[in-house]
Every structure is written in C-alpha cells, then in structure tokens.
Length: 455
Image 1 (cartoon, rainbow, N blue to C red):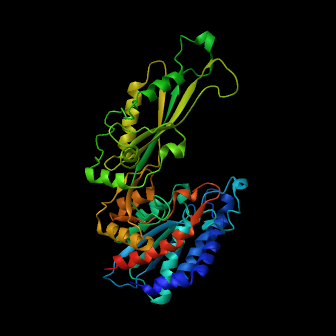
Image 2: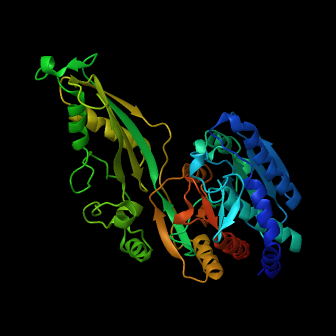
Image 3: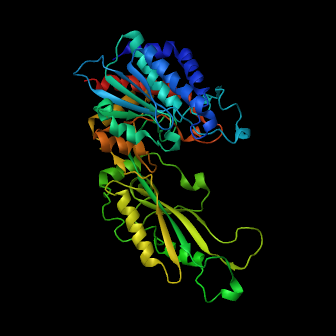
C-alpha cells in the first residue's frame, strides 16, 4: 500500500485544490465558438500538468473541432497492466448567469462544497486522477500501473470527433482496461459501483396533411387532422401498463435475473414522488420503478408540436405535426434495429389521408454492462469501501455515456466507472458544485485502486 502517496495528498491538499481552482477558472465552454481559445487553454493546462508529473509522449491531438490530450506512462514495466483513463475538460455554458450565487469561473468553497462550472462534470474528477499520479511520482518516483490518458474537449457537444480518433489510432490507445470518472454515487459519501449504462436511440416523426393550414369549419369532417393522426400513432406504441407495443421491441432484451434484482433492491433509490412532484410512480408491469429505470428499456415522447400555439383560439386544421421519441436500451438491444422496428410500426399504424416522415437519430449507442463479480469491479468496490468507510452499493444507470460503448466496441476491454459526484451537484445547472469529501476520499479511493490492480 502506498502510504507515501496517501500522505502526500493529505499534506498537499491546499496546493492541489489551488491547482484545481486554476483549472476550473478556464471557461472551456465547447459549444460556444467565442470560447475556442479558452477550450484550447484548458487542454494546455492538462498538457503542462502531465509533463510536470513525468508522462511521456504528451501531445495535443488536433481534431476538426476541439483538441484531444494524449499522454502515456510506461514506467511500471511490461508485467504491469495498462489502463486507459478517459475524461473531458470541456464544460457546459454557465447560463443563466444571474442564477449563480458566485462567479461560475471563480471557484468558491461554501459549506464543504466547491462551486464552479465543471467542478463535478468533469474537471474536478479528471483532476483527481492527475493529482494522484502526481502523488505517486513525487513520493515513489513511479506509478504502480502503466497509463494512457485520453482527455477530450468535446464531450458536452456529443464527442463529435472522438470515435474516429479511437478507431483510427487503436494501437496508440490500446490498453488492458479503461477507467472513467464522469459519473456519480447514489448519495453523498455512499460508494457506488456503476456497472451498467443504458443505450440510446431516437427518431422524429412528422405527419403531413394538407399543404397549408386549413379553416376547420370549411374542411373539418373531410380532411384528416395531422395532430389527431399523430396522437393515434403515438398512443398505439405504448399501453397503460408502460409496456411498449412495438412488435419485436423486447425480442433481444437481456432479462433481469434474481441476483441483479436483489442488488437493485438493496441500492439506495431516489424518492421519485418527492423529487418530481408526481402523485405516484408508474413502471412496466412486473417491475419496480428502480428495476425499470436501471434494467428495462424505456420509450419516451420528448416533445410534440403542431398547429396554433398562441393565446386564444385559431380554428384550423394544421398542415403538419411532429413528435420526438427516444428509447433507452438495455444489453442485447441494437439501436439501429430498434429504429427500424419503430419506423415499421409507425408506417403500419398511420391512418389514411396523411403521409409520414421518419428521421432517425444519428447519435446512438448500445447499452454497456460489466459483471458485478468481475475482479476489476470487486477491487473497485473494495477500494471505495476503504476510503469511504461504507459498504459499496451496485447500480445500473438509466442514462447513457456513448464513449463507454465506443471503447468496448473498438477495444473489447472492461470499463470501470469510478464516479464521485453526488445527486446534489447540479450538473449542467447554475451553482454546480462538488463535495470536498468526494475530492478527498475520491483521491484515496484511486490510490487504493491502483495499488489493488497492479498485480
């Protein structure tokens, strides 16, 4: 056990926190071109840090968008495993600025939390890894494992160029396993293994009727109303028991076994009624809300529009109506197949008198899952428990992280999600923050983990 590295992060905590503040002070907003120089400066910060730590072949890989930072450390020897560490240095816009209690790019500590844009997603968690690498190099002169670093600047805009780079440079990025810290825990100070993510796909339906809006008195009763037609199509795709009625939708779904259902039952769960204000929860027949959220596919209508939206009444039959649909997928389901099944159902369900257009979402991803009993996962759970002093719980997340599926598909390696965020972090919202407990105990967890996996 590297007691020296543990001692280093404790003795140099203020210095490390100061470096993190410098990192957070760079407004690396990837979606806004006016911040392009700042995004590049954030990449330079990481490059300088990696060089100072002692990494080799550190480079700024230019893309068609924002740069990716690569670096490697091979000093642990041929017998030591190599980890691919992924993270991102870009952040969401801070808007609306007026809702922040402090400047989003001037970090401030209040009530045990570090407030700044990117403090949790993902600069704070990326920095913890770099700080731990520094601790090892400053105290022992080497790392216990070999490391390849991949830190991108486009995660918040869909990782537009990452897949191409990972695919084209497979030899450069090849590793024995990957670690990503861009997620969170079930609750503050509750160590959590995230062993599964849902996949994602979507479509957009547009129902077209007349070539212009029509007077509803003159044409009502003779012309099919596109909004009503769209409503019939949508209603045919899911029943009152939250079961998707699209033929073939569940054919490839990996079933939940008894052991997984027990893990999900034990895991802390959000009080959906209190958190959302709904009168009661609903879930797929035969499954609890936690089971449905974590381990069963979902079908959601995210938006629907058409016709008159202003104040008062406008008596028309609108010329068109549109709905946006997304599905969260589980292991076994293929996004492209699901899109085709949805389109087939829509075409069958469409009534006469209208035409239907279906646009398929380009950014899709398959679900990811690693067995909770995998040795790398068991070592992660043990490391969490040592640092936080609590038993680790296991969760599958209802959200999606496309890069996880890409790494698995390209490199065929296990991926460990070591997240330290909390539900209160307000990701993407004003007053984003990160608990200093997570900062301190998270670095301890990483030290325990690298020592665990080195053999």
